[in-house]
Length: 233
Image (cartoon, rainbow, N blue to C red; front, side):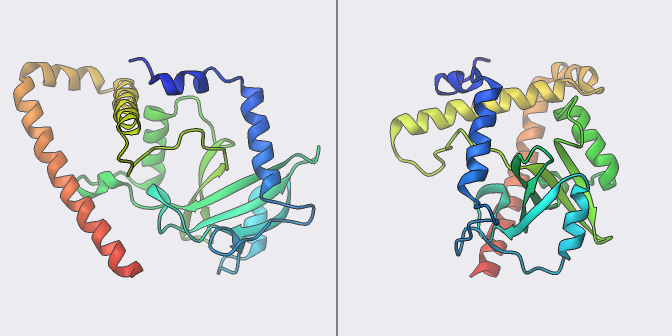
C-alpha cells in the first residue's frame, strides 16, 4: 500500500537531514549546564531511582543531567518517563528516554510470554535487525523494566480530535497505511502461512471471530481508560 501523500516527502528525507533535526531538538531542550526545565513539561528528576543507577546505563558516555516528563499523551500517558541528557566523546549531545514498561494491550485478552521471551518475539516480528543500542528493554533496580531509546523528533502530528475534513481524511489514510504495515510485519512471523491458510478456509468465520475479539478488547480498553481517568481526577 502506498503511504499517504503527506508522508511521502518525509519518507524520502535523507537520514543526515533528520539527524540534524534530532540534534537541534536536544539543543532546544538544554543549555551548556543541563536541561531547560519548564513546569509541567520537563522537570528536575527527584524520583526513587538513584542517579548513579541511571548513569550506569551509559558507561561510555557522560550523563550531564536527568529530568522527568510529567505529562504526555497517547500511549505514554500516565507512564513514568525519565530523560537523560547524554554526551559522547566527540561532545555530541542526545536525549535518552527511559519509559517504564507497561503491560501490553494484548495481555488483556491473551496470556503473554515471560517478558524476555516476549521481547524477543516482538523484535523478530516487528523490528527485524533492530538491536539493543537503538531500542532496548532494561531492568533497573532489580524489579522495574524500562524501554530505553534515543528521543527522536516526531514528524507527523496525528489529528486525533480534529473536525476538519482534510485532517480526518489524512487520519483515516494513515490508519489504513499503519494497519497494512502491521499486517506485513505479522506476515513475517513463522506461523504466518498456517494462519493465512486458516483464514482462507473460512473467511467469514475468521472475520466474525476477530470481530468478537476486537469488540471485547475495545470494551476492556475503554474500561481501563475510564479507571485511569478516575485515578487522575
